[in-house]
Image (cartoon, rainbow, N blue to C red; front, side):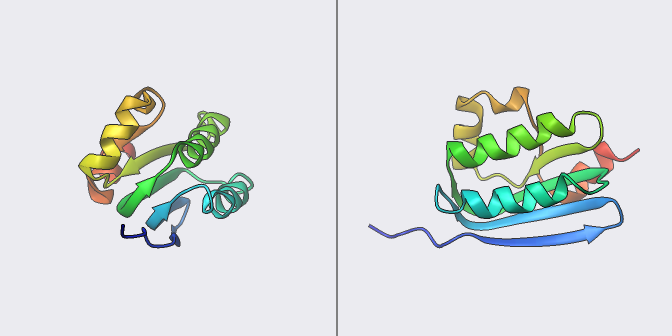
Amino acid sequence: MKRASQLRIEEKKDGQDRILSLQGSADILAMPAVQEVLSRYSKEDIRLLLIDLSGTEFINSPVWAVITLFARKRGHESRVAIVGMSPRIKGSFEMMGLQKELQTFPDVETARRELVQ
């Protein structure tokens, strides 16, 4: 059985917008790193946070919970959206009913066009 690669997190800042790219496996061991980044973001004036999963092989429910909780706490202060989900990740996302909590887009460009007006 092939082990999924460890999670790598890349951040891109563009004014009040942030793009957080998760690459590899977002499993329980990666949860503290994701929490740390989102905790830092909770203290910043962010208009838009796009979480790019195009390089993500796996994401478990505790990591989804951290992301969803961040989006709920931000409320109307900032928009949070998920971009670039693979069909496998999208299946689990929908199975957990997260489409009610988080908007999704095929890519960063589409999300920005739709959310920033």
